[in-house]
Structure formats: structure tokens, C-alpha cells
Length: 241
Image (tube, rainbow, N blue to C red; front, side, top):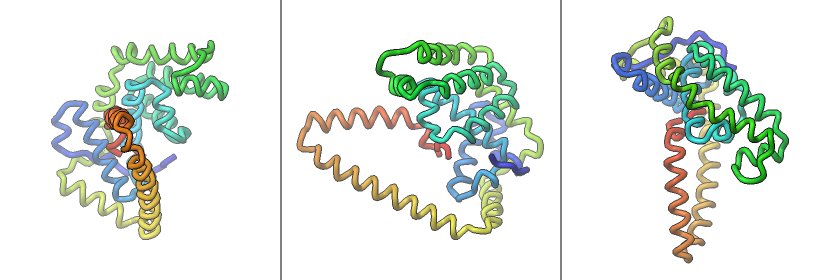
């Protein structure tokens, strides 16, 4: 869990826009910080809370708590950021639902968890119960609009730094300059990227082998397009991690 006193950084012009504009602007700034290898201890805690509440919103709207679980991976730290964000924004019904869904999912057997996440198989009472919680999400949105609450909360941040593009770049550069092990982080990031590139190359070779079957190639292309649309919001950063 990050514990820091860094201020939230936002584009000054975004403060004049809609709540959705402001939430998206925070996402862009946090992504820029991640891209420059800043860690969560070097990014505003409340900026991260806003960021991951929006991540949860996007995933829950797309595929319920199941999609959040799959996209989040290791949920421990993420769950805490989202809980704190929902509480601080005043989204108490969403917080209650999140806690109930998390408890219900964590109580599932391995078989039930697979049925719930995959969406295929015999639905037990436990799976039906968590699916019923998913059905409540959009109903709660009608009275607790997470984008509106998130945007209003960002505007009210104490010590908020409202900067132009150059100012944001300078602030990120200042924080990067304070990283004691920057070269080590860069080396780790390059090694990770190389690993992704190698995995991509292997997948690409496998795809080439399938191109002899036109029908299979068309099916693969359609599936890829569907995934691209589903993951568009995440591609902004895990999205976001």
C-alpha cells in the first residue's frame, strides 16, 4: 500500500471540463507517471484511488465482478485502494456492494470460482448469489454516479496541483529525479519488455502457422477485434498497473 503525501496533479484545463474529463485526465497523468517508472509510493495516494475506482467501474460495467477479478490479477492492494476511494468519495452503497462481492467471491470453491469467471457450467447457489450482486451494480449507479462522485472528489483535493502540460512534465521529471535506483528500475523494465516481445514473437509464429486455414484465420481475427474493444479502457495503462 502506498503511503505518501504527494499532491494530486491535474491539467488546469481539465478542471473546467466535465467530471468525466477530469477523471480521464487523472488517468492520463497517472499513466504518464507509470510510464516514467514512478512507483505507487511516488504517486499521489488519492490519484491512485481515483484511478482504480474508475478501473473497477469500467470492468464491472463490462463483465461484473468476475471481469474485475480477472483483469486485476493480484487484488489485495487494489481492493484496498478501491475501498478507500469509494469511502472517500461517499459512494457508500458501492462500497457495501464491493465488500459483499469480494467476500462472496473469496468464499467460492475452486470449481464455483471457475464457473463464475468463465461463465460456463452448472451454477450453484453460491455462484447465483454473486451473480445477483452483479445485477445490483447498475441500479446503484442510478443514485451513486461513480464518475460524478470521482470528479467532484478530485476537484476538492487539498493541495491539488493544477498545471499546464509543461508543468505536468516538469513535475513528473522532478519526481523521477528523486528515484534512488532509477537505473535499476530501467533495467528491470527493459527486461520485462524484452520478455513480452519474446512472448509476442512466439504467438505471432503460431498465428502464421494457422493462416493456411482461411476460415480459422477469419475466426481468430474476429475474436481479436472483440478483445481489442473489450480491453480498450485497460490499454490506457494496468490500464492501469
